[in-house]
Amino acid sequence: MKHRFAPARRPHWRASPTLSLGRGLAAILMLWLLAACEDTAPPTAAVPAPLPERPRIALVMKTLTNPFFIEMEKGARRAEQELSLELLVRTAAQETSIEQQIGIVDQLIRDRVAAIVIAPGDSVELIPVLKKAQDAGVLVVNIDNRLNPELSRKVGLFGVPFISVDNEAGAYAAVRTVTAGVARPTAAALIEGIRGAANAEDRKRGALRALAENPHIRVVAQESANWKVDEGLTVAEGLFQRHPDLEILFCANDMMAIGAIKYLASAGRDGVRVVGFDALEQARAAVRAGRLAATVDQQAAEQGYLGVVYAVKALNGGTLPAETLVETRVITAATLGPDPGPAPGPAGPQPPAAEPALPAHQPPARPSR
Ligand code: ALL
Image 1: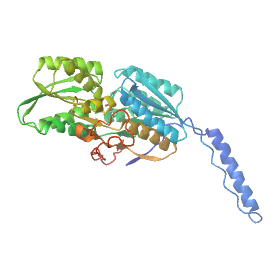
Image 2: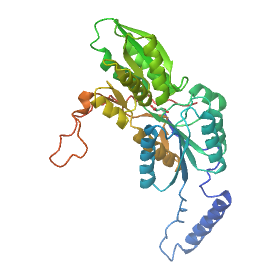
Image 3: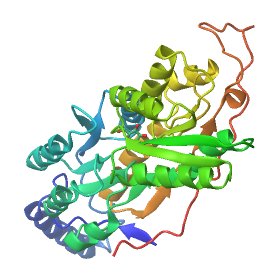
Image 4: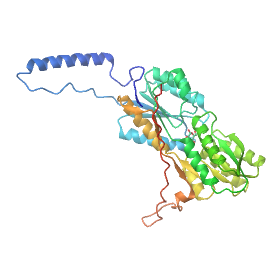
């Protein structure tokens, strides 16, 4: 099923009804003139289509304290370069600044942007203000973290295309890389993202499924560190103090994993297999150094790019899939290959081995009504 996006009200960047009426009359007049001259002159071109203004599209993300969103912005900027639009980028101060993100959307409605492409910090809290945006004629595209479909339906937020990854499959595949060979009793723990955020819950589900498949593995603790590096460190410290036998730790994003491996290094603990998610540069370096076992590349830039491209298509009256999932890739030392070093020259190290892509999961597009 594809959405045909019809904003509740006329989008701000389109011609006004008065203007359209004027053009309609002009067209009738032109047709009448053509009919009058048809025996004496060849047909002339139809009335030229109005030149669209550059629509203003806003990318709303959570925070720039996480390099994941810097990548996402890069992708959105690429779309801005390729298409005729003006991109506004807005972020809140922290991962947990949900109220601030709501305020940003409210302000964008007042600023009369044509579309909002949003990676919502929370799957529920943002819905009312996005409904308000839609009612005001602003097109909404959801990327990264899915808005809760039931609540969206309840408040009447319909036809919002969703672009992300299969978070459950990504977490499952990454955790499998550390559980596959385990053949003796082993304790595992999870550091979760913000509870209630759909992608945090999906990753938890995927990780738990992989851990449950190995009968030697016991999950002894699950705690949230709200996607943050400093909380990741403190939560890891508590976990390892309470469970010194922990050997496997899944963190739902790299920032928390970086916090956890920082703690492990300071505590002088080796041999814990830590898994992250996002494939940040710092995480890739940790994978190469053997301090992180695996992470998941979820193509933040591609998500940002597609979000803006979709917004433009929808503003132009195009139809879009209700759901688009981009590929995830599990990154391990084996997939990264040797450290390319700071400045590889023409005779420098070989490019890393190709990273095996997980098949992009494309479930049948669902109607959002
Ligand atoms: C999620 C992303 C990331 C990220 C996190 C932090 O929505 O998918 O994995 O690290 O936001 O806000």
